[in-house]
Amino acid sequence: MADQNALTEDLTRRMDGALETLRRDFAGLRSGRASPALLEPVRVEAYGGEVPLTQVGSIAVPEARMLTVQVWDRTLVGAVERAIRDAGLGLNPGSDGQTVRVPIPMLTQERRLELAKAAGRYAENAKIAVRGVRRDGMDQVKGFEKKGEISEDDVKDWSDVVQKLTDSYVKRIDESLADKDREIKQV
Image (cartoon, rainbow, N blue to C red; front, side, top):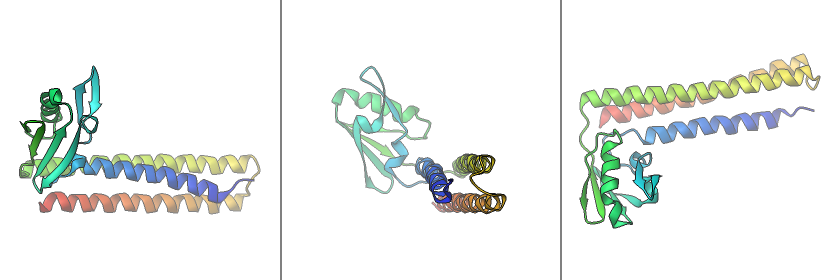
């Protein structure tokens, strides 16, 4: 027998994953404030391959407009600087011994618009992921009906539950986007 709670839990878990990905994407968008998440996507040429920055040093925020990376292996300081500079984040790091200092410049109006567009793309990708989960859920409901595990009335009820869940996640994505837009514009 099909279990509506199990279906709802699975869909909720998968939609939570889309929302979490959106949060990580938003954290990487620079809004004029220093955040360690800004450097998390940066990959460094080290040890014969590319590794995440977090595997070669620790990121700190000593002040509101400054990030520092304490590089553990002195020979990688130059590679860390290069990786940050080449990451397309508009940052210009400088080293001080084993510490790489990354000043966060003020945002220009043009850059704010670029960030707002990128935030919109990230939100749209999250909505697409949520709708994909919704489609899978609806397919499962139809499959249960074909197998005779649920009635036609149950199909309507279950479909309504899946749609309401989808609507709530789309609303949360829209709210997250609105918050990020405010953050980008106010700095």
